[in-house]
Image 1 (spheres, rainbow, N blue to C red):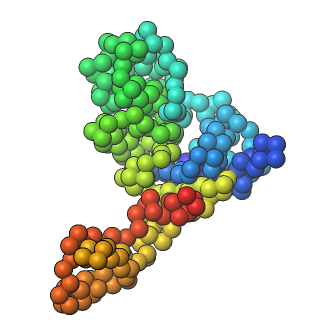
Image 2 (image 1 turned 135 degrees about the vertical axis):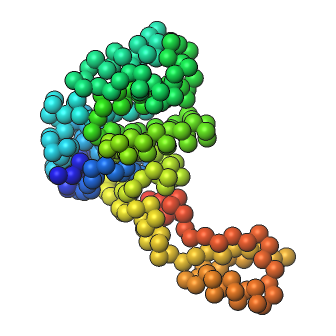
Image 3 (image 1 turned 90 degrees about the vertical axis):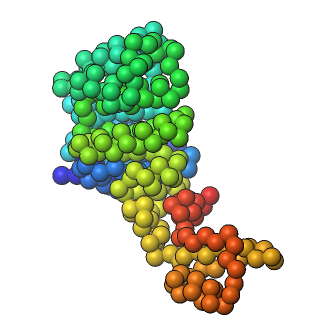
Length: 274
């Protein structure tokens, strides 16, 4: 049994077809990234999977259950973009209160340490910084010890160091057996975290694969760039080693040399027509 199965999912709002025959699956113990521009249908797809909306057609199974089954609530965790919490409770009180909603929660102090809020544990939520509040959101998402965790833009508002720390937390959760479905607009985040990726555009899934192979990245031509007095030169080749050897033997000065294949962002922009 897979952690998540979506087959031919469809949803319409009046004349607008928000989700069109979307299909993908998520294996147990992997990080799966669902990517796409605003209006691509990601939010509607996830809200159906999370049990907040009703599908028009198709099949959705979450941990082998219907997403609207109340018994599923104790087995999944949600980290949404905006989570309403009581501003006058402390961090520890907030996490402890949410722990009481689950039959077998994680230890409160363990979770506080996991999200690096030990120094803020006695502070009221209202005085936390934006990044600290986002870490609190993560804590509330994992306190129930979920088998499947949904992360919606988990590092929005984080500085670079905090983002790296959050990435390490997500990897640790995956390594401990938690399956994670991630949405993000940061392609470097998807590159760093995701085992597999699906890209949505105009209500459809237009590509799936690993970050390294999505859209044929692994077989794309290598781009060689260098500067000359006349301006930049860009070459595309399937044999970068041979091309560089020929350039060097011909005596070309390779100022500003870069050698790369299309990035995940390049592929994403091409797939979504951005």
